[in-house]
Length: 252
Image (cartoon, rainbow, N blue to C red; front, top):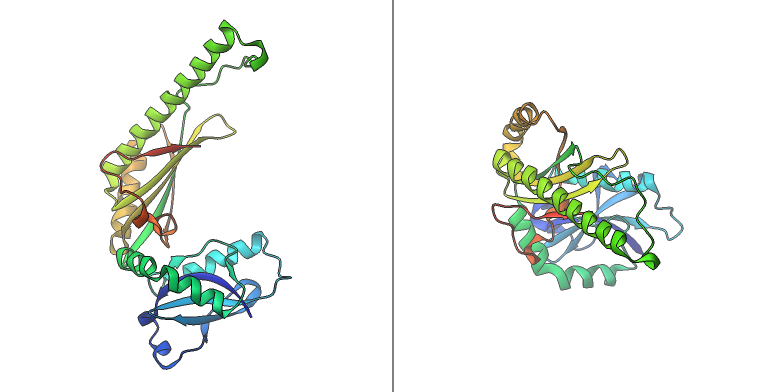
C-alpha cells in the first residue's frame, strides 16, 4: 500500500494512538480527492497520510487540498509539513524514512511548538530601472558590452540594498523569532519582497495590529498579509544558521 504524506507531528498529540500500533482513521479531516485521512504511528511521531493510487492525478487542485489538510491539522497541534507530492511506496518505506529522521523531526517539533508563520508581501518601486536598450550579444564583446555588464551589476546591488533596508525595517517593526526573505522583479517592473516571519501563535493579534501601523508608515509600498500558517519556511531551519539583526535577502 502506497501512502501520500501531508505532515508529521508528535504521537502524544493524538491520545487515541496510545492504544494502536496500526494506522487509524482521522475522521475530522478529508484528504486529496476526499480520501480518508489516517494517523500513522511511527515511534514517538504520528504521520498524517492517506492511501495513494499511482494513477491519481496530483494537479493544482490536489496541491490546494494538500495545503488544506496541513492547515486543518495545524489547528490541532504542531505540524511539520511535507512537500506536495511526498509519497511512500509502502509501510516499510514510510517507517524507514521516519526512523532515520526522527531526531530532526522531534527537534523541529520542539522548536516550533506554539509558533506560527505570518507571510508579508511588499510591492515597491524598482530603485534601479533596466535600461530599455538591448544588451549587446556576448560575441560582440567590447567597451559597450562590458559597460552594460557593470551597470547591470550596479543595479542589482542597488536592488539588494533597498530590499535589505526594507527587510531590516520590517524586522524592527515586527520583531519575529525568525524570518525568511526573498526579493524578485515582477512583470510590472516593480520589486516584490516576500517575507515569512515566525512568531508565537499567541501573538498573532498583536502582529496584525503592527501590520496596520506598518501599512500607514510605508506609504510608498503596497503590503499584503496572510496567516497564521503552519511553519512552512522554518521546518528545516535547525540545519542552517540563524540570522541576526540584519536579514539576509535572497534575490531571485
